[in-house]
Image 1 (cartoon, each protein chain N blue to C red):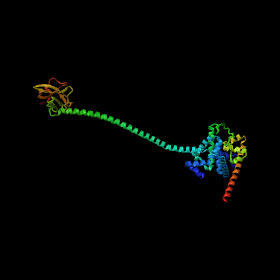
Image 2: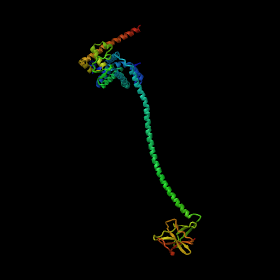
Image 3: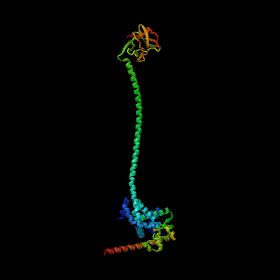
Image 4: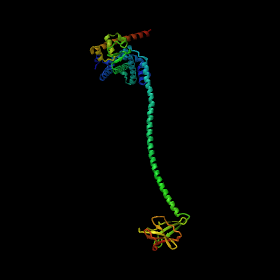
Length: 185
Length: 250
């Protein structure tokens, strides 16, 4: 179904439409939420809270300003960061061990692991993207975390995004070629 | 802010990540509306960002969706429950207004009842007075009207030609009542007195006053006539014959 129609239905208080948006976006958002808070049960609560906020605030979403995912991502990130602030910085992990969420612990399995085109990036590019896109760091916090000047950090992000663009662009061209090849028999 | 600065300073990324201040956000949004090339860049950035998010998606447990459904549908149930709540609130308000209306009515009725009770009391008192008056009137009537009562009119002689009194004699009950209202007023030091003539002796029956309609006097057996004289105030033991103003033979 056309996404703008789906969003219109959510605006009209159609819960089924919201569940369809959930089916489409919950995994992408959960990927972000879990990497930020690193606690599955907490992340599940936050994911639910995110969709309740989407349900309640859908009228404030303006599609001319950006994609639905971007809007939903912002809600998910802010909800996660607020929840972390509330719980202070002591986070309990799945195996019930307690660790200090200094933000530098990349040793946690699964959660920190990145997939797809990100894996092909240089490690410092990968880390820069990971910090701001998947860990909820601001540019300011992230450059301090990486121990590089802000200007350098911005360059990392720009270069990483260019690499991703190239990668996704190639994927796009490849996809178009495959579709062309299939349709031409 | 020009396009070059926006791109070099990473403002598009910050805008996407919601890291900007309100004024910075407004600046970028205006730039995106005006600069098609910049908007294209942002669209690509968003697309890549979303692509990256889907590549790194982690499937949440099905219980999250179930919990979300329960939460939203419970809310709906709660809303449904709100209808009885509003209905209850409306009934409560209606009850309150009705109670107030009935209370006001009751107060008015109470006031009316009080005034009716007061009026009834007044009427009862007036009725008692009326009954008493009626009784007095009946008694008076009985004294002057009946088969055994014989009325005698005593008209004034030349000394008091306009005077008039009526004596009602009941021989069966041995009672005499006189209506003396027709007698002229006398000076304060004088009074009318009535006498019975029995074998030539004048026997005192009592005093008369023009201000009283019916005066009961002493009944004298074997009286032959009734006589009225003017006497000094308080009456006399013997009649002043010179001041006889009226008499009637029985």
